[in-house]
Length: 393
Image (tube, rainbow, N blue to C red; front, side, top):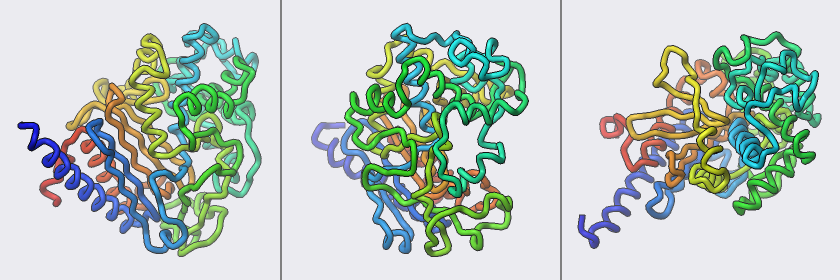
């Protein structure tokens, strides 16, 4: 391609890419999402940014890509990064048994290593499935949870399997990680995120939330109210606390404290993409620790070449390219963040409702539209159309 044709062609394809993603985002809104934001940076120019909203939600707050958003389980990638920074400094080791840092707090903790916590092979049951957490998840209990209290809820259930035997996603692993980080450093998780990640990278809207307080302009998060919740959603998850609005409940003022080290970080699409770039390019971790982050176990034992989980991050090879990613859901907020192995290409999809991801069969249209948008966003990051995009227009 000659140089004088490059920019025009590039900007033309970028406009097409933006139109395609905006069209898919509007389909997600039409299927029931109050709002959607997409950001794609293919490393070759100005990022593509899209924000779409339902009219009723727009009258409440106009979404901007700079809006703060609850990141849910994407928090785990930051927590793993903190652990690996401390291992590089000789303050922790991935082979350390949990008992070394949390003596007597985890049954069988002598056989569970920090690596097993980080890659979900410990066998610990998930504390979020305990009924004690339900009032907090629904926003009816705004108590401030500590890592130790969340861990205690998780370990009162029998382990799912022997440490290291297989893979099973459990938020309790990261409650334990949070407690280890605090004990090993003497600092709070909020201080660690601030001092080791947010400030060095200039992430002005990224912080560990200890209560419901937001620090800047933020996206409003919603769930359907009890009357409009689809019948397939279990009875106990139908009634969220919050301000009623157009058949929904605004859950923005509910505390994410119960997410703890597994899910309490707040950030923005732009901040998170900068974090992903810094992480994958080696700015946050030395080469040896970045290699550990990317050492994976199969998520599905019968699919060794399928998705793999590393330390707080997962990987998947798709038709469009190999990505490292995580997603996070907390009431009112669902986000997926993607990066290529170098950190030069990043992408994010943020949707301002989350129950549909927990109960996709109850929200078939929204779940389908969301998957289509995520697939197209992933491929756009590599400058490629999503598989089937030409056929569907």
